[in-house]
Length: 114
Length: 115
Image (cartoon, rainbow over all chains, first blue to last red; front, side, top):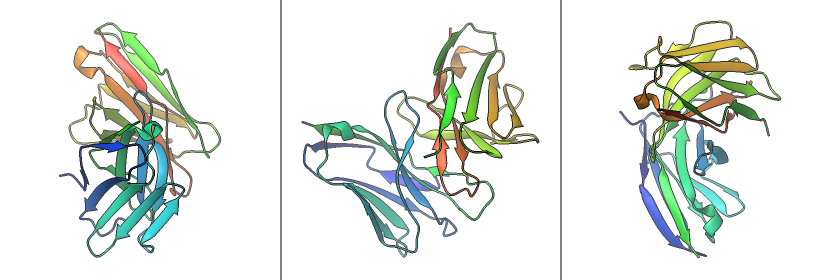
């Protein structure tokens, strides 16, 4: 059973536009929600992360919005650039656990047209 | 930030041979490391959790005799694909959380092709 559901599967955005990727989870024990960016042939790299005690976190052009009651969180990429074209994964984990295991969404392939 | 180095970045091997992939935490100690497998255009699938000084914990459906994991030190975990077959061809990625499990760092990945 997919612990974290991610949509859309693919996204095409024009340069300068806003890219929005959504994720939902069921396990209320999750308390850490990172987003990873992955380029072809590379490992994932942490982009931005949020904890459930805040509703929004912004780092440069990247913003996470978090809705605890709806058990949903989303990534917004403002002023999208061709260099942002990559696969994005949302994830969730229980930081209080000793394993730090991440549960990944299925990924969103973002293409930004120049 | 912390760095996890994975080696090799790609390998081609003949069917029936074994391949070893190394995962090193360069500037922090990792008592736990994770090994993932990723098929093209798919998400990361956790294969096993590597624990320093003890046996690895494998996910359901992952053959422990085929995917041997050794975590002999606090900075090194290895994944050995034994008697590799073409269906084992995939992208393998390791990950290590920092000591406080506050953040997970990923290796560069290893593209395995079995011919």
